Length: 129
Image (cartoon, rainbow, N blue to C red; front, side, top):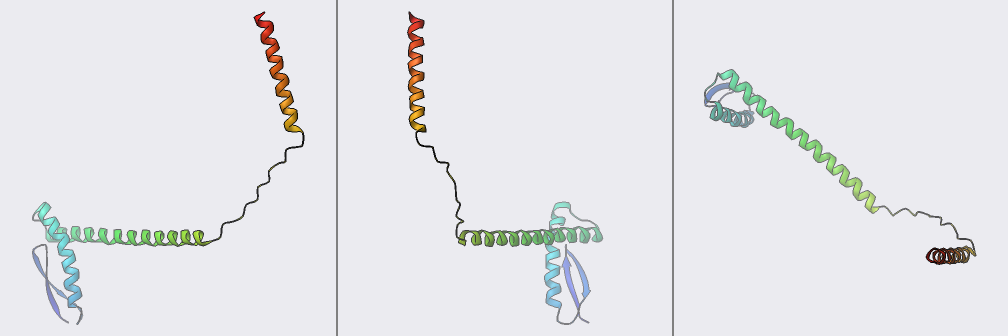
């Protein structure tokens, strides 16, 4: 079983891995080291276990955020497909029934309006007299 030496937060660790997985271990250690370097720059020296815990939590937070982003992107793609399907569908025909105005109603209303105006004129004449 191969042993690989990795550097995380300025500290070296000997880690065993399966044969052929050395490059994966180096990549994973590099990701963890990135987070540890941020901690070292912000806080300074701290106990090894605390540094590894904090760096691991920061990395896990990034991974969880990436999962959320992937779920949101999948939902956006789903909504875009639904939108495209709705645009492609032929518009539905809507029938609107308009009531028919009975014959003579317009003339009757015009006659009533004329009578109302005549009455208003009459009232106005009596009021000014």
